[in-house]
Image 1 (cartoon, rainbow, N blue to C red):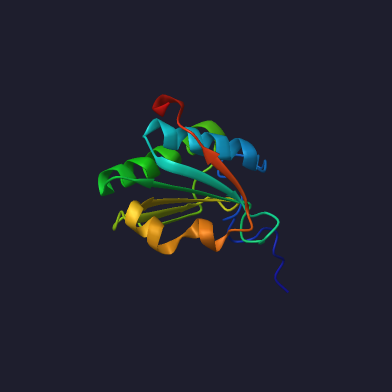
Image 2 (tube, rainbow, N blue to C red):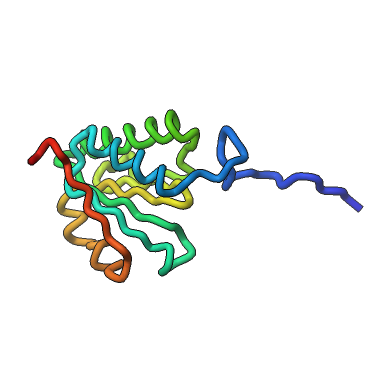
Amino acid sequence: MTDIKQPAKKQFENAFTDDTPDSQEMVEVITEALLSRKGKDITVLDVSELTTLTDYFVVCHGNSDVQIKALADVVEDDVREKMGEKAWKKEGLQGRSWVILDFVNIVVHVMSKEKRDFYGLERMWNDAKVTYIEDSDEK
């Protein structure tokens, strides 16, 4: 009989350590990254009580496909640099109208305003605890 000592893939584990990342701290890193590139209407949805898929959705939109790409890139870079995490899955980088970065416990949605208005993730998850992130520079 074959003796299996380790799983073939460690896809859900941290890339650099065996520690589980603090979701709240990661949300702060993500929102700061989005603010640094002028992400619009940043919203954090705490869905931990509603689904087992993830703990948080972070949703924002950009004004152009170039800004959407820049927002996604800065989130990836800052989370890797500050938290030692990398996205488990990435979708939409080619089309640049809706980029999804899946960090397992947190899923980041960077969209065009049109896609955001049409799909309405905030309306879909209207039972979630919502936090609106305000840009102190715009006051």
